[in-house]
Length: 496
Ligand code: AHR
View (spheres, rainbow, N blue to C red):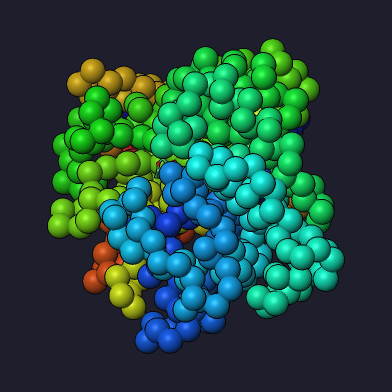
C-alpha cells in the first residue's frame, strides 16, 4: 500500500491570527464580473434588490465575504470616480479599453459599490487611479467617501446623491500594477509617486490602510525598492501571482477543462510557488520592517486559463473545476502559514472572471468548486493559526514532483480546533496520521470535496456535481488523528 504521510500539530504553540480579510474578493469592471454578475439594475427581469442580483447576494452572504476590492485591476488606473456618481442616466458612457473594448456606462459607481459591500457586511477596498489622474483626484474621492455629513462641498454632494453619512473605507489601493498596466513605471518612480498620492489621501472616518502596488511573482527588486522608499508611508504592499498550467506564454495558458494529467501536475507545482514568493518577499520586508507593520496583501491570486471557447477573450471567462478547488485549498493553507505577514488577500475574481466564486448566465447562477472551498474554510476567519508540519510522500508527473499533502490548522474563538488537509495526488489516496500536542479532542467530523474526474465541475444544468459532503473517515486515538485522504480531495475537519 501507499506509504503514509505524517504530521505534527502543535496546539500548545499558537501562532498569529489569520485575518478574515485573507478571504477577500476582487471585483473589477471586466467582462460580466460587475454588470450581469452583481449589478443588473432595478428594472431587470432577473430578481434583484435595488439592482443587485438576489441570488448572488445570498450566495456571497452565505460564505461571509469579508472584503471586496474594486474597481480594478488595470481598470482602476483609467477610472475617474466622478464618472460614476449622480443620476445614472447622465453618467458618461465610455469604452473599457482594458477589457474587450465594451461600453462602460458607469451605472455601477461609488454608491453602488459601497451599497454592495454594505449589503454583504463586508469591508471596502477601493483602488485609486495613480496611473492617469492627479493626486487631487484620489484625495477628493477619499473625501467624498469619508467626510462627515453636511461638512464639505464633497460631503454635501454625496448627500445630494443619496448618502449623507460617510462610508468607512478599510483599504485604499495606491494604483495597480504600476510596473505594467498602471503606467509601466520603474520601481523608484512608482514608489515616489506612491508616497505623494498616499500623503494627500486622508480618511476622516476612521483608519484607512494604504496598499501600494507591489510586485508580481518573484520581482524581489520591486519589493526591496518599495520598502526602502515607501515602507514608512504605506500599510501594505500588494503581491500578485496567478497560477497558469503553461507558464511560458500568456497567449497559451492551457484549457480550464479537458486537460491532461501533466497540466494538473504543473498547475499544482506552479501554485505551490506561492510559498516561495511569500517567504522571499517577507524576508525582504523583515529587513525594513521587523515589527511587521506593513502587510503583504496578496490581492490578486488564482488560476488563469485560456478563456472559455466562444467567449469574448477580453472577458477572462473560464470554467472552474476540482483542480481549482485544490488550488484554492493549497493557497489558503500557504496564507495560513504566513498569517504574520499576509493579513489580507483577494482572489481574482468574485463573479464570472478567472477563478470565480460564482458563474452566471442570464438569470441562472452556479456555485463553483472554489466557492465551496471558501465555505469549508470559514472557521479560519479570525482564528488562531496552529503550527502543523507535514512529512508527505511525493506526487510525481512529468518533470513535476511535490509533496502530495498540504495542511493548515486553526483554533477558533470557542476553542475548537479545525484541520484542513489537501491531497493533490490525482491518483492515489493518502493515509495520514497527525500527532497532536495541546489539543483535547477525541473525535472529528467534517466535509470533503472530491470527484472522480480531475476536471469535474458544476454547470448550469448540473449545479451540484461537485459539492462538499459529510466526511466521517477521521479517527482520534491517543492524541493522534488518523485519516485516509481520497485522491484529489480537500478535507476540512472540526475536532471535538
Ligand atoms: O485580474 C485581471 C487583471 O490581472 C487585473 O486587472 C490586473 O491587475 C492583473 O494583471
